[in-house]
Amino acid sequence: MEIEQIEILAFLQRHSPFQELPAEQLHQVALSIDIGYFKAGTTILRFNDPLHALHLIRSGAVETFRRNGDLYNRLSEGGIFGEQGLLRGAKVRFPATALEDTLIYFIPGEVFQQLFDDNEFFADYVEVGDSERRKTTKAARQAQSNLLSSTVSSLLNREPVSIGSNATVWQAAELMTEQNVSSLLILHHASEPALNGTLAGIITDKDIRARLVAPGLKSETPVIDIMSPDPITIDQQQYIFEAMTLMLRYNLHHLPVLKQRHPVGVIAISDIIRYESQHSLFVVSRIFRQQTVAELQALTTDVQACFVRMVNEDANSQMIGSAMAAIGRSVKQRLLELAETALGPPPVPYCFLALGSMARDEQLILTDQDNALILDNRFEPALHDSYFQQLAQFVSDGLAACGYTYCTGKIMATNPEWRQPLTVWQQYFRSWIEQPTAERLLHSSIFFDIDGVWGQTQWAEQLQQLVSSTARRKPLFLASMTRNALSRTPPLGFFKDFVMEQDGKHNNSLNIKRRGTAPFVDLIRIHALAIGSEASNSFNRLKDITDAAVLPKGRAEDLRDAFEVIAMTRIRHQAAALQQGLEPDNNVLPEQLSEFERKHLKEAFQVLSNAQKFLKFHFKA
Picture 1 (tube, rainbow, N blue to C red):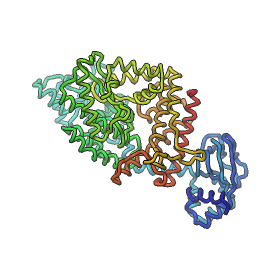
Picture 2: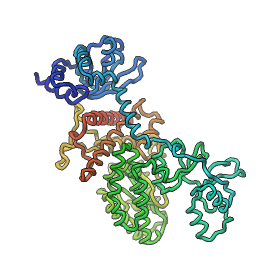
Picture 3: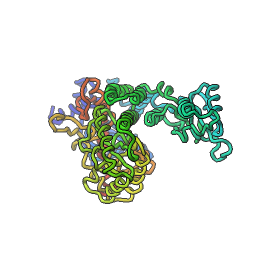
Picture 4: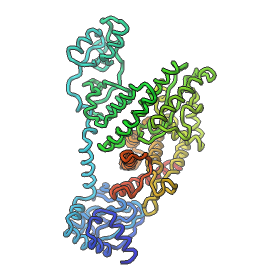
C-alpha cells in the first residue's frame, strides 16, 4: 500500500460508517479511492447527471441543494453525499457545490454497492441520510429533556384566584381562606375600563403578616395599600426554565402567568420543583438563609453538584448558564446584605454591577469575578468612599471564598476606577464608543455585558440604553471592535485539523473558551451592537440578529447551533473534571472526545471561522 493510501485508510478509520467496517473490507475501500479537488464556488454535482461514486469530504465544506435550489444540507470533513443518487438509478438527486476549497475522496459506485449489500450497519447508515440522522439525534435529545422544554401553561392546574383593586384586605383574606391559596391576584376594577381585568398587583400570606398585622393596620385597609404593584410576570407560552430563571433571579415565591396581558394563573416554587430536577432553586433558597461568609462558602459543593446534575440530565447550555448565573447573582446579593448589616446603611444610593458571563446569564462552574459600583451623583470621595471601599472588599473577598476567583485584570469594585458616580460611568461609555483605543476596546468587551444586581438597578439599564442607542451609529467603533474580536481565531489548521495549545501545563489541548466560546460571544455582541439590540444573553442577541436579517439566510441558525456545540463541549468537560475530583478548566483534550464529538466540534469551529470572515467584510475591518 502506498503512503497516500495509508493516509486514506487512517482517515476512513476515524469516520462513520467506514470505521465500523471489517479491516479487510476497509483496506479494499482505501485501495479503490480516487481524489478530486474543487475550488470554493465550484459545482461538484448537477441534478440528474450520471453518478459514478460516493463522495466523501476529506477537507473543506460542501452544500447540497434540492432541485428547486433550496439548501438541503451543509457538510464538512467526514461527510458523505451522493448516496441517495447511487441508490436511485445512479443519477444525481441533490446537486452539490464547494462552499470552500475542498478535497473529495471518490468511492466507486460498484464498491459502494458491495458495501451496501454486505454490511448491515453501512446500509442502515447511508439509507437514512445525514439530514435525517441529525433530526433523529435532535429528537432523542428533546425527548430526554422534555420536562425542561415544557411551557409554563403545563404547570397550571386551576383558574387564577383574584379580587378587584377596590377590595379591602379583610375581603382578600376571606377569599384566600375560602379558596385555600397563599397568594391572590389583584385586578384593576371596572372603574378603569382601559385596564379592566388586567393585573394590578399581588398579595401573599407574608404580605398580610408583614404589611398589615405587624404595623397594626385595620382589616378595612385597601388591598392596594399592601399589595406588590406591577409584579414580575411570565407568558403562558414561555418555557418552564424561563420561569425558573425569573424566580431565581428575583427571589420570587409566586409568579403570575399571563395570556394576552390577562392573568390565567399563578405558579409557585413547589410547581417548579416538580420539573426542576437539578435543584438550583434549593441552592438559591439556602444561599439567602446563610448568616456568614463561611456558611456561604460551605455551599460550594452544593453548587458544583447542581452543575453536574444539570449536565447529566441533558439541560442545554442556556439553561445551565442561566441557573449558574442566578446562583452567582444570589451569592453576590447575600454578600451585599451581609455587608450592609456589618457596615450600616450606605451614605448615598448605589448600584452593584455584575459583568461578563454573569450579566449574560452564561456563567459556568469555572469563573472569575467581574463587578463594579455605580454611585449616586452626590457621591463625595472624602466623605463616602471609605464605606464603598469596605463594601467592595467585603463582597470581593466573599466571592473569592465561594469559588469566584479574583479578576486578574482588576475589573472589580475594589478598584477605584470602577467605583464611580453615574455621570462618570456615562462619560466612560461615551469615550469608549467615540474614541476607541486598544484599552478602551478591551473595556467595551467587558462592560457592554452589564447587569444591575443590587440597589439602583435602573442605572445599569440606563447605561445599556446609552450603548444600544450610540454604538450602532459609530461605524469606526464597530470596525475597531471587529478587529479586536478577530484576534482570537478558532483552533483549526489548513486541513481543518485541530491546532493545539503549546503552553506547557496545557500542552496539546484546546482552550475551548479562549478559542471557542469567547470569540463567538465577541462576534455576536458586535452584530447586536450594530442593530441596537438591548439583549445581554448571546442566544437572545442571536434572536434579535435573526429578526433584523443582517446575516445571510440560515447563518444565524448555524451560529446558534455551533455556539451550543462548543459551549456544551466546555460544560461537559468541566462536569467530568468535577466528577473525577479534579479542578475544572477550559482545556479539552481531543483524544478524550468521541469521533462524533470531534467531527461536530470541527464543524462548529468552521462555522465560527466563516462568521469571522463575514464579520471582517461586513464591518470593513
